[in-house]
Length: 323
Image 1: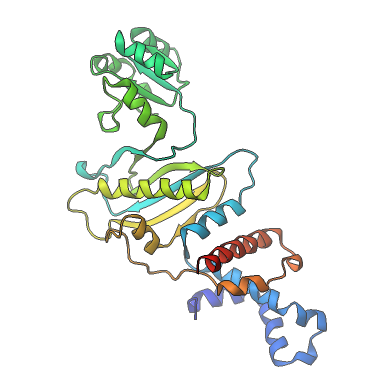
Image 2: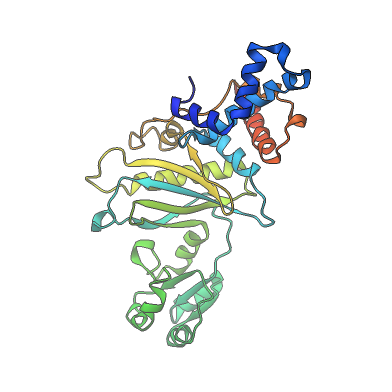
């Protein structure tokens, strides 16, 4: 069976009428109307869909996951594509409190507003690079008066002692310049290039790491390359002494959509075949790729189910084309 016994039982409990109709169609064809018999294959697809939804966190290949994310895109704006890592780390330990900036080949697609604390030549370099705010004591006074209209802060080492006055304002919002992020530097142009393509990350108490890796409008190839860069960044900062598996799970999601669990085997391949990724314990949900072409989408009454089936059909077509 392609699902566990518990998943089947849950699906049958929630779709009792559908399951009963399928049994009657199979055992007593004459007792069921022609229209009901004609709808039996569609109902079976619905039962499989329900089982897949109820099955515990089914995993999906990256291509299928991206197709599913686009299928549930309902927002009127360009949603972000986020990745969530479940790492086997304890952020309470100093050497496992992961925090940094992963440089992505295609950036995150977001426009950054940067405040730079600098004077002299560094201040001029910041203005030339496109900083939103540049200053020293005057900028600190504006922040005290409520100015927080920026996304990142950069400071030269000479200006860091002055930021003690606003540390309690910037710190809780994650805006304080940090050497781990590279935002305490004299190389203003270099850090601006990194910030434009960088995705900051920070391990939460439970070992989760959230990061933005693009927009829904990005091509699949761009998102996959950004995802690969993010996975490689996680592997590169692995603390010593962490137990296997280092990366337990990886999920993709959009701003307004549900998350999709990625297949561990593909995540391991993105990491260059690294054994730091959990071995796949969940079966990848799916049917034979050719079977998806037999579904008559015009007969599907549910708009949500129709979108799901369209996504699966598109992914199946890509699988058949690559075979």
